[in-house]
Image (cartoon, rainbow, N blue to C red; front, side):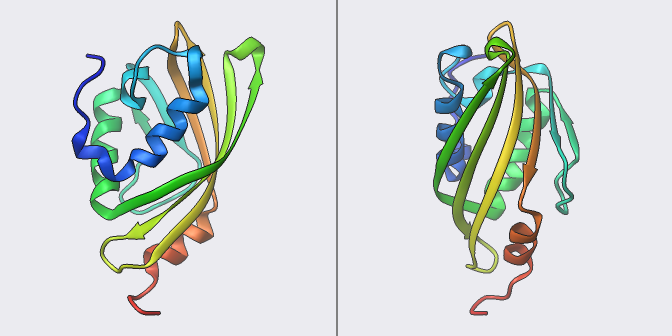
Length: 145
């Protein structure tokens, strides 16, 4: 169901826009959720409370991101570096996100590296790495600390 209204995910719009820009013409669909399928595997190689290590399919990925946007609002995503491999079937995407943890008001800045496999103009596998210490520090900081 491409090109839906994704207003519920607006708090993460900088991330979704950056990723969609990184994918460019290699995929079909206007929004990040338009370029994943019911079989897409989204794998994170870090532990964050409440975030599963492996997410399968578009619906479960959208549900996970609902939790993300209820906890964090992003103000920007930047420092994009895209490496192409395997004739464009694999992208290595480096980037940073900047925002605020809603429960505490603490600033959140993190770096990521994502390895993305594309088949039939859709994401079939996503493997994510991040600065776990930056996430842990922001998530456990007290307001005003």
